[in-house]
Amino acid sequence: MYQPVIAGTGVFTPEQIITNKELVAAYNAYADRFNERHKSEIEAGEIEPKAHSSEEFIVKASGIEQRHVMDKSGVLDPEIMHPLLRERSDDEPSIMAEMAVDACTKALEKAGKTAGDVDAVIVAASNHERPYPAIAIEVQDLLGIDGFGFDMNVACSSATFAIQAAADMIRTGSARAVLVVNPEICSGHLEWRDRDCHFIFGDVCTATLIIRKEEATTPHFEILSTRCLTQFSNNIRNNNGFLRRCRPDGMKDRRDMQFMQNGRKVFKEVVPIVAEHMLTHLEEEGHRPDQLRRMWLHQANKAMNDFIGRKVLGRVPTPEEQPNILQDYANTSSAGSIIAFSKYSDDLAPGDLGIICSFGAGYSVGSVIVKRA
Image (cartoon, rainbow, N blue to C red):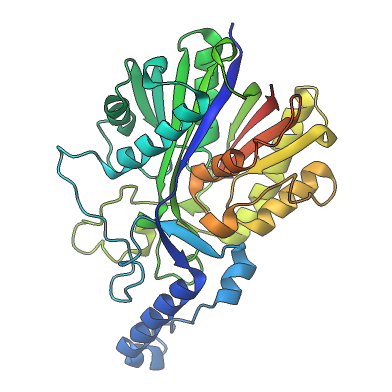
């Protein structure tokens, strides 16, 4: 049996940024146009008018201040309200694979490794641009990796579930090194015309290189234990699934074809599940919450993370103990906890204990206990 370690991480961040101010201006312009076009139906009480959004509402509801996206022009156009992503030919690299290669290259460089050291690629994300061939196999080909690749989807827990799969491969000897990649183009699935959620998501890609401990040549984290849990719920759902907006006539305006959630129920039900999952995982592995130097939580909602942090530690966590990147990146689905880990882990000392935890639709929860080597 081999000891798996996280040897390096990489983050691809889109250059384009949408601030709350820009987003609110676009949404309110859309709402005004909608209300004008449907003035007679609104006056007759047949439909409800669209209320305005505001910067204060967004920050209070989520803690988000901006988000990175692959295309902002379409999102900020009140007549379009979705990203304009060029459809690529089958002979071109896909947009997800292009993002993935950038993040993977950074993770390999940080670990002092090359594509020749890698045996497998797992592309784990909530949103995939096609059903097959697997994006992972395309990434494997673009990087020049001999081995295998496959895609997986456990919504916002995709990264932690994939880390467990990769760690198991390393532990049993079926692979020397595995790249876990999370290319999330959430902007293509967000309903930007819905005031209750138009601010939630951003785009990004993260990569995590997991290898055998004896082959690590740079600072790294031992993966001490992983734990996954799923429990079915319809409170977070997406009935469309793919980035393309080409749908049969009559489906293009169906609200249920994009991201949907019952936010109040999600908060009420998910928070105790996640806190209990983390506490049980730590206890069964012989660790106490007060031994945690850091928690890298899924970046969905600041209030949710603050509540979970208090439940786990029994007190309010400090920003150092529970770093947030939500304000800069928004919710990036499975990539959020990995962005936090990538940006806020280098300062830990040998022996420091931490936990990566993500949670989301399913419901799904994945946790990874790590120790700085």
